[in-house]
Length: 152
Image (cartoon, rainbow, N blue to C red; front, side, top):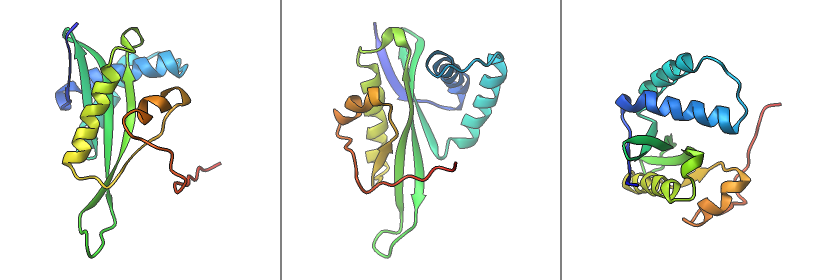
């Protein structure tokens, strides 16, 4: 099996939408019935957000098998650093039948390489308990300084 990871483009929006649908229905219990409408909506969202949400795509033998996203946010400038940005890893997904073969690691490697290239100050991730060791293997650590507010 030949696996490749690359930055996705607007031309990949439908494939990304299909992966997102698959994740939501297989792992999150979503019972939506209109996949085509969701993929269309998601494709438009991808195109509208390419400046802030950078998608990466994994392909194996010409099949789309995984995705990961780097959300980039501008931060308030300081006198010493006028351009400040941070990132957030989002929606890392590999189809279940190909997990534990290094595809997720390759996707994350591509995301973090882009974060370095963009000179991001830090990168966060909101992870499931199952995936915490995956992120820790590449250097993510728990941080006591982060606080979270969530509306009731």
